[in-house]
Image 1: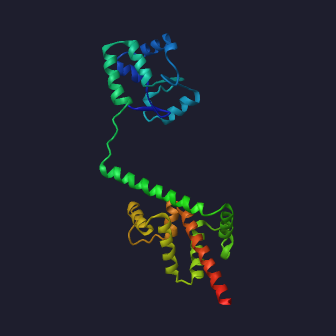
Image 2: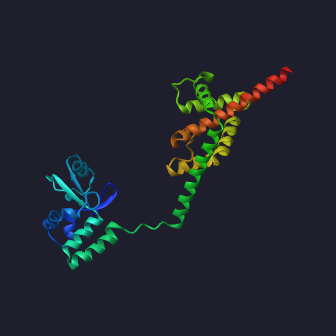
Image 3: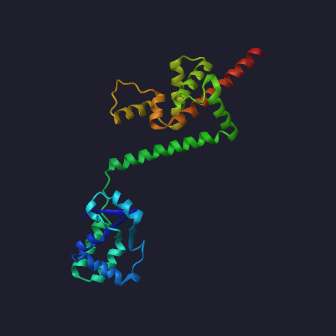
Length: 261
């Protein structure tokens, strides 16, 4: 039987219910009309008409489930099917209701393998660690510091608001590299180490896994800014870069003071 869901609830059309109970659809309709006070809309059935019916027709894959010219459609829930079974009272109806309840309304869930369970747990753990790391970093900054951060990101070293976050990340790491007196590759290594420490991860390994998952050739280089953009982590990377740049400026100021003493 073709499964039908409405608003997250498994349901049956009148025709499907009649087919299961081996009776005529008209008998289902008559039992309903003669016992309206025993049926509650939203509990035993859903009544679709106008826009709701039109929307349902567009979503359902099996076009034979709904008559082309139907103006009203009744969808019966598990409780509605049970009520109709009691009203019919036949051995076949009871037999089929048990079958519907077991296999249609409560289908057996696919059992996950041990590997799938462990993979899901590991993925959730990584997400939780990332959420915790973000929270810890944000707690270190007051609202005033955040305002300064946004202002600095838009104005320092000629970086304007029209540049995207990826360009800002490049510019911020380059600025940090100059302030710290490092080579270009050393600056990015420092950034990578800081990012890994902040978010308890290994970003280079993450890039390797990302390339394998998306069938990207091993020889093709995926830069850090490009990877962060693809997976939606540029804001996290910018936060780490800003902290590095801020610390580099602080050390530079201290060195300048010591030189003048």
